[in-house]
Image (tube, rainbow, N blue to C red; front, side, top):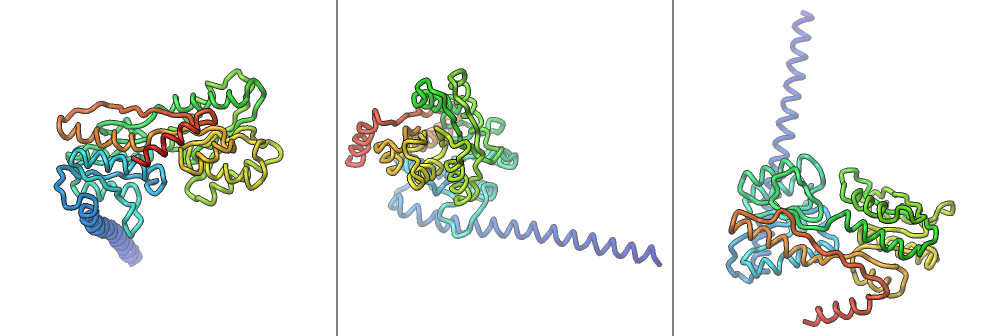
Length: 347
């Protein structure tokens, strides 16, 4: 009797596990189907608004966790403009959807939607590598942008050389220090999968080595905007080891650092070497609150991605790497840079 009861209990347990697994799988499928439905509706609207019912040959999507950042808006517009020239419709997948989807789910939606090409900022997860390979097997070429996944079957990488960027940061640190002893804090991504920031840090370290510079890496949790802001403020207000120079590798960190040194009257005490050329950051450079900022041509990045996809679609071959130039903006060239930006906006 005991054996029979034990057997029945095991049978019920296995049944419950099977039902749970099936339910989980079914929910996943439903989420993807809903995502595809919403996506196709948004795509239909976008196609009409962007191309005014003009015909296009290809349909590409851009996928990133950072799509709502100003920098990615510029990447998108660069891709959109280049796409119009080449008869390709480009859209941001995930930005205008009413439901929030993970990078993995967005890749699955793109593959199931059978689009012609994917522009992707990977996150280092093996599941994303597998999905890049799955897209490739389905005949959908993938171009990685800003962050690479060299172990995948992606067709090309568009971005900067992270080590060279680190060297450029290092040169700015040496210019600020001017031979004096300095304490430098570099804000890195707390996500250990982001290897790019570690390479940038190596470039900085190697450049300033032997110049009486003390360097420290501060891991910033960028999953929470308020958490990131609070961590940066704590670093700036640390009375025991406040940095002489704060190095920011993202536009968001640069803005938080700028605001903090202003709020806590640290202007002139802490020099900021930042990233990106938003209007606020450029004005801060002009006022010499931010010493300098690194930037790349975001529109060029987007255009190169579309070039790579279209070239591969047409020839089945494409260069493995499209390098993007790095620019340094400081008080010496800010006036000329602002003049060029003004002239471009008037064209």
